Length: 179
Image (cartoon, rainbow, N blue to C red; front, side, top):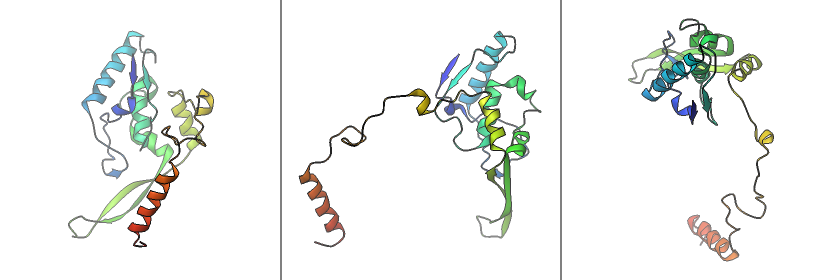
């Protein structure tokens, strides 16, 4: 099973006691749950081995460590060792530091305690965990053709004519009140 644009299925449900930590999304989607069921079924055809599923995306981790945990749940269910052993909290305590503080309440009635993700720690180990399930390719590894942008703009148009440049400069002067 090949699933392209897998980052669109990053909102997989999770049970956690860390419901009030900013940066740890608790959103869920039917698309993610559907993919979860399909990956479980496909892997069951291979007797529980981590085979038969390919998730393709250019942005597997956009915002949080919870996305790494989600991809682990899709691709490494046996490695996680069951629903309780794979808790996002256990993954997080090894690879992140939180910051605790007080924030104003939105209604202005005082302060409330807040916990927020502060920074990653043990990044080499985190990359090791992630590289067990990801096949990462850099632009240098792919050796893709890159257009020469010295003679052309990024969208492929030739440089603007001199008349257009003069006109745009006159608009800049007029907008600044210099004309």
